[in-house]
Length: 265
Image 1 (cartoon, rainbow, N blue to C red):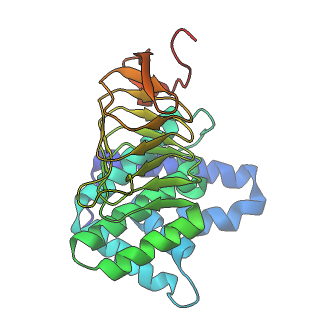
Image 2 (tube, rainbow, N blue to C red; image 1 turned 30 degrees about the vertical axis):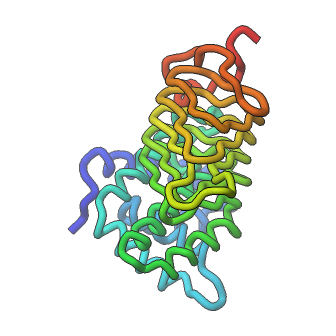
Image 3 (cartoon, rainbow, N blue to C red; image 1 turned 60 degrees about the vertical axis):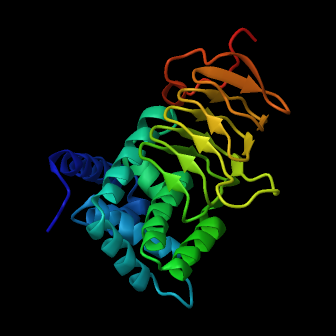
């Protein structure tokens, strides 16, 4: 049974239509567009095929991974909802994204998120070894390292992706924007629940680091290159090493507006 509702089907139809036009505009990529988009009946099939082909290896065939990804998506509807929400987030927040199909085909931050959703499902079903395979290959292929046990919401944008690290007990709520080089890590002194909790609507700018079981409050902004060691108040901006509050977030929705400038600077 296909769980993709009307709105998801409409998004898939839009992707197919724009891809058909791109075939005409760039015939060199005609075979690529057909094999990745046009030959599939749904967005879940396309995602499964793309991720499996990327993460497959000489010892683990893409076909086997494709079956695992499809099993995950069919077993847990939230995975597909998360995928579509992430896709829309990339299209809405990244000014370089001109087509809905672009994150699906080319954005490694988006692909890494979808691979993590499968790894998380595997982890939750005590298939830890295979979940670690997904984590390892995602890090190798996309440059993004997310522990399978980390809890990520939906509508997340990981822009550029390279160097993003998210630790085991991290929580990233809905509608967060994360840029290259961000680390959500431990302090090295703790065990158990030891990683950051990033609340809804937060903007984590490039190369910002958050260490320990600290909370980044709703709709807060962490400036580029900052090192956060303490809780961050809702709707505030922090900057520096170590990070200190330097003002308000400057916008009601930092993750959506993606304004990296510090208010008043």
